Image (cartoon, rainbow, N blue to C red; front, side, top):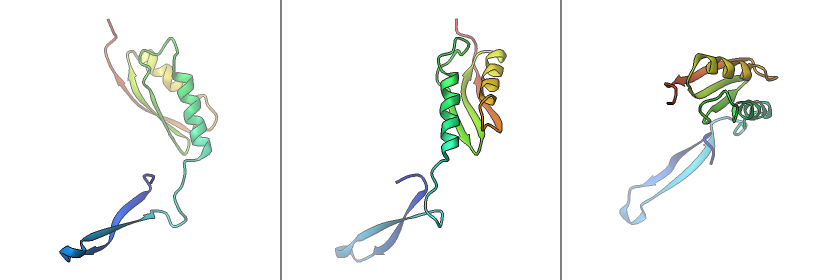
Length: 110
């Protein structure tokens, strides 16, 4: 089950010889679960690919989350220039409305 489902006990029997709990699930949305939009997935993939393996990135573990065109960047940077380069690179893709900076700073490796 995806994160959009919630389990709840439907019936609890308190007789020890009939002890059972039946779990049922239902979608949180009346028309069923919503999958992420193809555009969000495509933007996330493109931004992630653009940031990985570049000579100006110091840490390879960058997480990109896209929701309704808003890109969130999570990871670590060593310099302000690296942070700006990552933010600018993420803004360049079609479908990006805004970039949210969640990048943490770490001292440069020695």
